[in-house]
Structures are given as C-alpha cells and as structure tokens.
Image 1 (cartoon, rainbow, N blue to C red):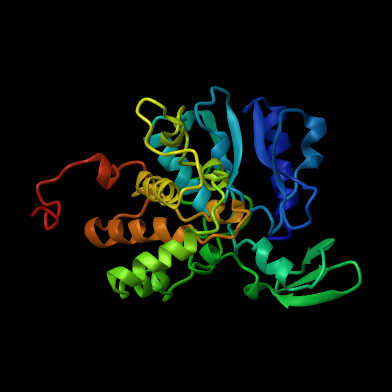
Image 2: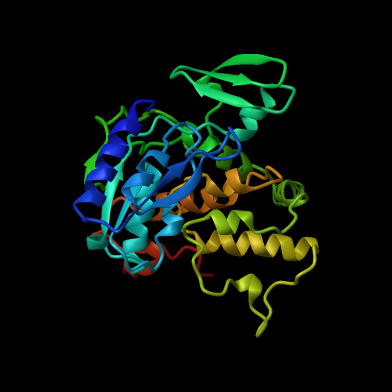
Length: 315
C-alpha cells in the first residue's frame, strides 16, 4: 500500500486536467501522526497535498451525500460497498463518480498504536510488515498485524467491489476467518448477562455523536435524536437515553453497514459500538444471505418483501 500514492496523484491529475471531474475526494496529512484527514482537491496545484498510508481509515463516502458535481473518490473495499449503498438509496448517481479503487491491507488502529508507547506519539512510519512508532524519548517497532483495526482483521472484501480504475493489482482476500466470533460470544450469554454487558459498554458514552457523524449511513437531514416533535430521546446523559440512541442508530444501519469501522475510530471514549451493528449484519447474513453493497442489482432485505422471507418472529 505504501507505493499507491504516486498512482493516486497520477490518476487525480489526469482527471482534473481533462475535466472529467470537478474535484477529488481523498486524504491529506493530518495534524495527528496517527490520522490523515479528508480533503477535497479541485486544483492541479493541490494534487501534491494528497497522501495515502495506513492512517487513511475514515470512510470518504460520508462526503458524497447529495452532491451534484462530477467527483473522483478514493475508495477501499468497504468504501466501495458504501458507494453502492449510496447509489441504491439515491444519494448520488453512478455517472457522477470516478472511483479510484484501493486494494487494502488494513488500516492502523490509532488506539492500539498509541498504547504501544508510554508517551505521546510524534511519528509513525509504516514499513509494510512493521510499523515504527516514535515518542518524545523512545521508539518501538511493532508488527503491523498487531495494530490493525478490529474490522480490518475480519474483512473479507479488501478489494473494491466497484471502481473505474485500480491503483494496483488486487490483494489476496482473507479466507477461513470467523467474522462474528465476538457476536456469537455475546449471543451465548443469558439475557441478564447481555444486558449487563451493554450497560457496561455504553456507560462511558458522553453522547458526542461522533460515531453518527463519522458514519456514511447517517445522512438524515434531522436525526431522530434531534427531533422535538415528537421527542424520541432526551438530551441528558440518562443511561436509558444513551442506550436508546445507540440501539436505534444500529437498527437504522441494519442491512446497510459495511463494517468500515469509522464509528469506533471516531469515538473519543473507545467504545466498541461495532458490536451492535455487527449483530444486525450477522442477522441479515443468516436470515437473508445478504451482505451490504456488493452490487447494484439486488435490493437490500429491509427494502424488499418476498413470500419466502422468514416469519418465525411473528407470534
């Protein structure tokens, strides 16, 4: 992945020069060495601002919603599936997009990287198999696989499912992994134990809504938490309101989530909110054989009705 940036710049420059797109949505260097930041490039003299490394984990599809321009966008496997979801949900048109596909080997988790040194991280160098993390007074070399985001560890769609041009040859997909081991462990708990698990998990939530804001699926003009007539969720830090927010948001993502991990990476409290969306992703797979965003031809299960749909839940 380290050699992708030259090709990304070459493609982006050609698209802008030939006026095939009005802007490129990509990444530039962030102020935090563990995180690159999204950027929009619409001038040739800004092409060199673009970067690509293992800190480019944010889902850029968040910046496509309802745009009218012709857009070039850099897309990993999970991003490309969200692009398909956006197209299906009429939030963007396929003909507006030039998708620069990124075969992805996984993104570095900023929390895992920060925890590997006992001081503030000032520099991160991804050397392929290993990552050099430097603090003010020490540096450590860590196996890259030990730093990957949790969603990247179980990703089975590393290559984009839709693209106009790939920056490199496809990478080998992961096979033989158990994607839902953590979900199955929670399912095996008793009702009381599950309730306690989620009570504990969500107890540190400060209701900043960073998970919602980072999610490419949360594009409603007015979120249910901001509705006042009727008011679905209170504005205090009451535990019931906090759980209501997380549970309802997860259900809004059912059959749509691609497990990009943006919600967890945005959370300042390091809450594993993917546990909720992954449960619903597993249910969609088990009940309907459905994975979000793999193509444009099949409608999502919650968007259709079939006589063969499971009805065991009806009492």
